[in-house]
Amino acid sequence: MATLEIRDLHVSVETKEGAKPILRGVDLTIASGETHAIMGPNGSGKSTLASALAGHPKYAVTQGSVTLDGEDVLAMSVDERARAGLFLAMQYPVEVPGVSVANFLRTAKTAIAGEAPKLRTWGKEVKGAMENLRIDPAFSERSLNEGFSGGEKKRHEILQLELLKPRFAILDETDSGLDVDALRIVSEGVNRALASTDVGVLLITHYTRILRYIKPDFVHVFVDGRIAEEGGPELAERLENEGYDRFVGAGATMS
Ligand code: ADP
Ligand code: MG
Ligand code: MG
Image (cartoon, rainbow, N blue to C red; front, top):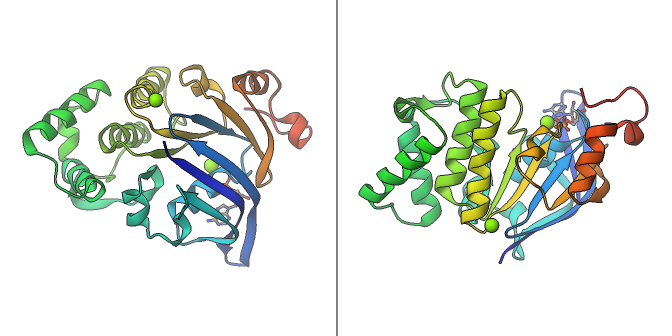
């Protein structure tokens, strides 16, 4: 049982005009096996939270703390965060020509596990996970993120989730740009990880539709850089019907 604890987190983003405060005191605790959804209007700071947790250099933590079982996550390098069991899809957003998907997965697994996976069983695991996600076998020889379509990026994200078996996964807009079939396949991947491991999931989304496939235990509504309301799955249903209007006033809707 592990706990990811975010306390009074304040984050500023570097812009040409200087540091711009975005997160204004986020409090959130995620335990192993729990699924938390963060929902909120565009521009409310959801991706900023993900970037800050990933250790993106543009996002400066000005106040507060993030700990994983008491260990200071903010003091860790990006690699150390991965080894500690944090999975942030945004950790590797860059195109890496010359590094194939297969090589990347094996290197990442080795770094996280502390030893190289056994070649034969690893090959089988990768093949099985790719079949589950309906990923073409040729995909594993592609250069990392080079020319990936939106859907391929999302599937690669879930492929990593299934193979790297993190303790906590932060998934930002995993549903965006997916058609209904791809959304179902990707959601099934997340649900397999939830069922077969003790992973804690933070699912960040603007829309409620992915929550028809992945059932959150807790829903947090993010407005203006902080959590404005919290509840169970019923809160997502309410947002589906009512949108974000009552949080941000008329004009902001789900669409
Ligand atoms: P969300 O993911 O909820 O749509 P973001 O975290 O992407 O929100 O953005 C929150 C606010 O921070 C927005 O006003 C956005 O313009 C600003 N912001 C985020 N990242 C940057 C950046 N790299 N440069 C300038 N402004 C940024
Ligand atoms: Mg975003
Ligand atoms: Mg579970």
